[in-house]
Image (cartoon, rainbow, N blue to C red; front, side, top):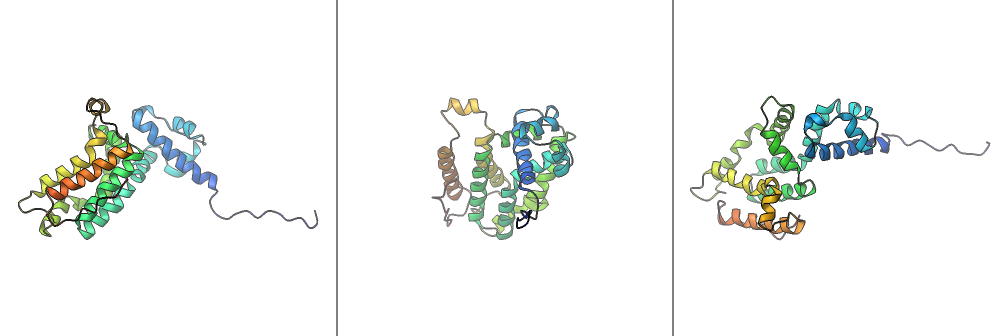
Length: 224
């Protein structure tokens, strides 16, 4: 009609497609955490996400690509903190790395258990191969030297074994999320946000008063 205006189309990827990708990742993570990998079909993921199954092929190629991307994007905040920690080599970055891990895993508390299950699988298992690929990319091949670097810079207590300090750090960070819920219940523990905040700051104090050099300002009083 004369004088009427045709609505202009917005340039760029439709929001619906962007939402579809996020929905696929979210529902894939939920399914992989409670159902064995071989039992999770792309059709099931698409159905749960409410999107066309073709979107999996469009964004991720196949189920392996979706699983790898899910792992990679869930761990992306840790990758960024790991890069900062290795580059700067400061103790505060060590605390921030633990804070980031607690914060992110509080959103998906079953994710660490999924990783623990995957790492008990044979090296040839698809899930383990994909996770090790992502872990190598995130942790960097030279991440084994991290605590040795901290020791060289005088950031560990004198006489502290960097290898054992690393194991202690991983234990403090990961254990609450991989411990069987029944075991936690026996001790009256529920992984609420408030509890994790308290545990986080407690673990930071343990590190500051334990294997880290005594002149550390733990920068606590932060929360998830």
